[in-house]
Amino acid sequence: MRLLKALRREPLDRPPIWFMRQAGRYLPEYRELRSRHTFDEAMRDPVVAAEITLQPLRRFPLDAAIVFSDIMTPLTAMGVGIDFDPGPRLTPRSAGEVARLGELDPARVDFVAATIATVRASLDPRVTVIGFAGGPATLLAYLLEGGGSQQFANFRKSFHSDDPAEALAVLARAMRVYLTAQIEAGAEVVQMFDTWVGLLSTDQFKRWALPAARQALAGLGVPTIYFAPGATHLIDLLSLVGATAYGVDWRLPLGESWRRVGESYPIQGNLDPALLLSDPATVRAGTVRVLEEADARPGHIFNLGHGVLPDTPLANVEEMVNTVTGWGGHVATGAFSGVSETR
Ligand code: 1CP
Image 1 (spheres, rainbow, N blue to C red):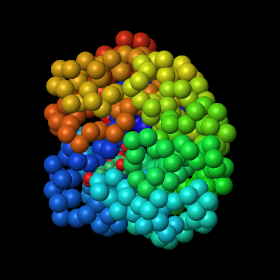
Image 2 (tube, protein in one colour):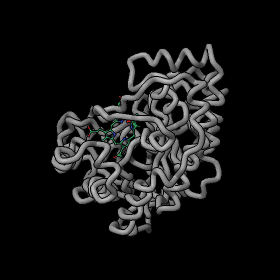
Image 3 (tube, rainbow, N blue to C red):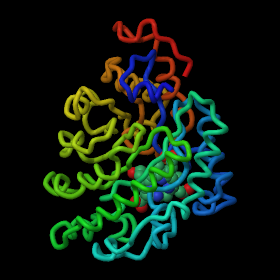
């Protein structure tokens, strides 16, 4: 509820909070479940995947649940074999081979839809369910490299020596189908993670990655969030993606990111996940700084600037969440007065 209101830029008593990788290795209960299932098994079993999705919600009063899956999962339904160790490992392909991957059959990712339906049915209706997909450029990066990489040289080379347009169009069409299946199953918001798009130049982004992301997100019928970390050089162009809201990392102060994305868009971010490796007092001060940068403007969605790191102490996450959920009392401007929300 609170997240949906922020996405409409309605005034709220405090910003909504959720955080990327909120279901994951920093949680002892996640590590316990994962000790009994591989990543792939956990993701493909809707009972286990729903349980992992709900784990952070049992600890913290978050405003959203993000389905436990991976950006690479839909590619398996297009015939790409992927191992997780812990990141994705696959046989590298050429841009031409990616262009020939074909369509995504949503029946082959029905376990994601089943997870979303289970999560939606077991959650307080005020908590928003978020579905997600990888950005076409980011998926292409993994497909060309065969996994994570220091330089992503094959990916960057393909923008000089191949025309990646067809490969990106195939991935954009597939992600559109994948996001639509998640929305039909109950996802109320979808986020596109374009983790590696910042490796591209502004010209490459404008010519290739941006139209593909735009095509995947257009007209889905629910609010969309486009997240491009490490892409400060692209920030003035982000709104051309056509999403409802934009996620930004910690590299710029939130206020500056917001101005450069455009004051009329909701903005999500931007606490540095490395700050959560410190101590509760430092976490509180850093969280307050983000809230002050947002300056009580409607449309702020509190989040990290990237995923929570595996070694993050729980006490620090708790301090961050408590600082945000207790923030209403600190609001000095009139923007939120008269509005009360329990979640
Ligand atoms: O238990 C484990 O060791 C597995 C670690 C793990 C987890 C918890 C992987 C492998 N994927 C996930 C889940 C995941 N991945 C979620 C779940 C929902 C949540 O946020 O709680 C999401 C949204 C993702 C998305 C994802 N996967 C991204 C985009 C976000 C980001 O961090 O930039 C990326 C780049 C991936 C690829 C991937 N999958 C896993 C890892 C460790 C990686 C990245 C490492 C690499 O590039 O090698």
